[in-house]
Image (cartoon, rainbow, N blue to C red; front, side):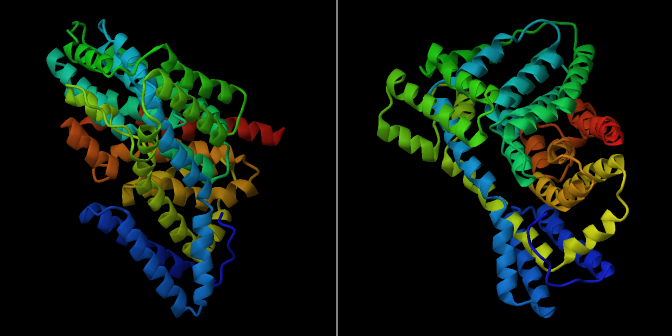
Length: 458
């Protein structure tokens, strides 16, 4: 939990009522009014400061709580800066284009839904962004599905499943970095640990999509158009694989994520300079503003135009505000009071993990924001996991299994609204077929506690 001592101890009923009022306010602004989450969080901060002043908490203490809460996210903030640079450098070195091009090469045969799921997952891992993957490759696959006369609902379910597999497993993903940083787990240890539930969910989903796939083959003209446009960028070469190889080597050597990403970015930048002929001034501009593609095929332009420090500022500002908001919840005693009541009831490991998953899902449903689902749930349960002698990596895994992947299944959530718009398929239509997203929290709640229960008994 936040390293902040409460300056007030409200009654449990008061804490519950005030917490519901705050969450209700955030939910109303995000769901009903459609505002960005920054605004209701700022209003929540104002409300908490007013509450603290009424309860005679010195403003200096409230300010310290706000600052200390934000400070806990500085590790994620610096990683986000580097991720923006990594994405842009991987673009200009041809690493992401060559990964996407390779993915299209596997399209063919009769397992259409399974192939869509698998390739979207591969590209999702390379991109590190579920929404970008869905809005680019996902749109292309929807077009292919229409040509095949395939089910749009199942095609969309496969796209969403693959995109959010990539969002969970990619070291470039902001939610993956956030989940690991909020609870104090090394990024690559976190990715390794979530594979215990993510890989089974992937395999089961792939089998289901393969069974549901139509038997007829289809001409993948859209894929060919993508490949031709990718070739026309002139970015792809054999050296395009080296930044990825560098990142893999760093991962195997267990180099810290910050250093690994920095090394891979520098390798990509050097090859972009000497192999693709970009000037240093252009490179530094791309580091900050991201890469802008200019092919004759607009979908590829949309796919490759991304990255840069500037692209991460929305996420960074939200992280700072949300964690500062959480710091105020602690200093006013609202969260500590709720935690005390919760800790008295959560004793068994299974009940702790199920309660964590249920809380993450609940925040997604009530607020519709996956960052808040990860941050609020993580900060709420860290103390409980420590008391139960559960490793922090179990908490970070549960946050991803029940926080990250549930957001696209909520019709009024940020991801749900975005995906339904770009794919043209309503959330409630693709929801039953987003098998990976549905299986991840189920596998976590059913199986994740068993091994730890056995270890603790032994």
